[in-house]
Amino acid sequence: MFLGIDCSGVTAELALLVPDGREWIAREDTPRQADVIFPLLEKIMADAAITKNDITAIGAITGPGSFTGIRVGLALAQGLADGLGIPAFGIDAFAAVRGERREARGEIIVLESKRAELYVWHDNKTEMLTPEQIRQLAGNNKTVVHNLAENIFVSPLASRLSPLAAAAARHAQMMHAKNTPGEILAPYYLRDADAKPNAA
Image (spheres, rainbow, N blue to C red):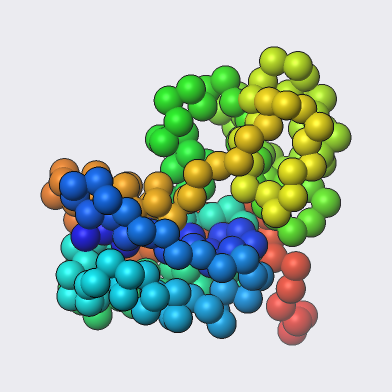
């Protein structure tokens, strides 16, 4: 059983994946992931009729996204992995999407940032762009996939991403199958934190 965790956006999302392909998803739309992540974990384990000891490996989305949310998700993943003695594997959201979507080379991947500029991957690079810049970049022939709370794109080529937590669980399954050692999870950020340390 493989657990996937994503708290990088405006949701707290967990996925459980069984080797035979069955999966469970639990999510709550909230920017306060720390308040709901543990009840979601209990719920998804109850839905799948398992305990923590049935988890083989854990995958977590490392970012980009909410500074606090990312740390909540990675802390849960690392804490569970260390406590259970199982491996944890991190993967950034852009890599997770590209791994799930074979056609992603011609796509623009847009992730929630909770600010005017959004996290964007295109043409093998990442940057922060406004919705208008993304529309211009997409033109009439590039598909935009996103995890935004609201679909800000007028293009009919825009579509929602599948759950990133499920992609993280499949990443953990793949890494475990290769006997890859677990790792210490680290956040992936595209911008500096809003809060700055006080000057000495």
